[in-house]
Length: 451
Image (cartoon, rainbow, N blue to C red; front, side):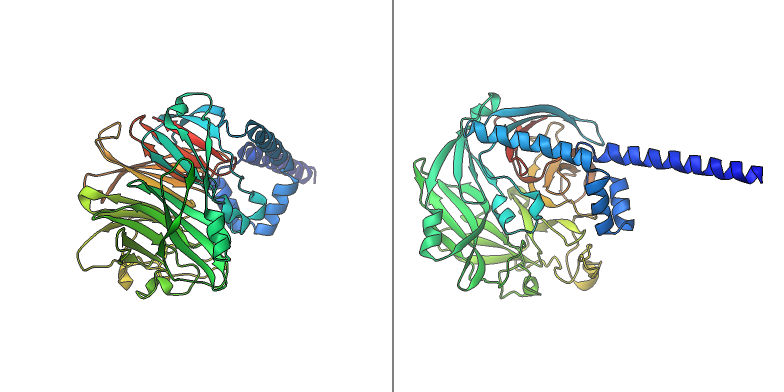
């Protein structure tokens, strides 16, 4: 009897100590913001119902959460008070997870409204919190999801302030003339003295996304309709795509999401779920690929005649796709029939793409990383003379560094640069200074990353 009592007592002591260790371990993970790709967190999310995990987060771990909120609110006050200064407020070295390479990040304030995480990623208001950037010679231009346009001299990234300047534009006038409601700007692109933007709006016919352009003018940007998709959908969703990118033969690339219209991505008569080229003079378009869910990154490699795109999967299945363009061939990437992700209600798709006549993704991520824009860095520009993709992410708050072979059809190495408490919407590479310019959504801010 005494032995049983001592055994039970020892058992409960061990159980108690184990509980303390688990609690301290989880506290350490969630303190300072946790990595949503952390294996322990991902495992717990699989076995613990969402309602319970959120309850634990908002009660047991409320102290580290409140500390982060207070820190964030203080940062917001500082951002508001400094106005258009574009003040440098953070400078830190980040070390990549696998290869332990050092990257220096300098972070400057942007005057745009911040993402409201409390509303959820699919909220209509957060659709207006997606901001974009473009490098034009010695200047950097930015546009907010609300259509605000600013710029600063690129040389200011070496200083303590960016000294941002506003540019007037006629976006609100366009919306008023068309009796339309802005849902959000979807990209900014520059070519041949023109700025191009994609804009999603709602009018009497429903929701749509079109392309506009304006001649570069530092006093006022006067946008005009460049390309009308003619596609409408009835309800708000976040699957509109909208990326723009350079192409050949006086054309630009334009990507669209499937906009929650079932099988539209498989319909050649619909522009939804497609990547097309648009001839700048005639506005005629050509279908280049189909079967896309929600393209978020786009890049054209001229010497290989290759289009690289990234796109969101459902729950899992974020993709990097390669399209080595071939004459009279329109590759189909499978949505919404094949995907390596599943819907949030558990609905499954056909895993294999090739078995059903579709193109397999070059790379896919399960769980999702919230994949966004990418930069291709050829071997002539990279530090070790190799081919690289730098792929940004929203959910994972990271840049994934992918080393490729010369033919860009095989992955040689993968690494990850993780930025806690961040979402990366856009990324550009500046040849002159050998740095990446990164748009972070939470503050928001612009990061200058050197390697």
